[in-house]
Amino acid sequence: MSRRNPTMLPKSPRNIVAALVLLALGAAGGFIAGRDEAPATGAEASQDIGGEAVLRAYAARRSDEWLEAGGVVTRTLADDNKGDRHQRFIVEVAPGHTLLIAHNIDLAPRVPLKAGDRVVMRGEYEWTDKGGVLHWTHHDPGGRRDGGWIRHAGKTYR
Figure (cartoon, rainbow, N blue to C red):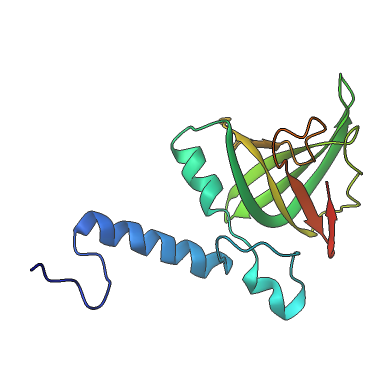
């Protein structure tokens, strides 16, 4: 019979380092992964979704990966009007790590954002050397997949 680690702490140095990094990220940003609710305000701000999934996808240079993340809008950009129109903005999802959001406003309503606003989004991540792009933050007009969304100030934009 094998003995289990009663404290549930990692035993190898590699696992200890990984656990410490995740704890530091959580402490620095007040993140709780996997939450699916509207962005918090005031005292609830420490319960926002963190950027752990984005950081993992970025480090592994993965693309075409569906994920959820939340953070603070650092900058709004001009719309991309070539082809399908996209609202574009930058979100800091973890300390020092930003993500470009490309939200299709031909398929979903524009999100009324400004720098400093908190948002939570679900979409398809594409790796870039600048931190990545999240797109498909809207419903699937063909009904083939769940699609994504953006939550801001208690409202969901699909």
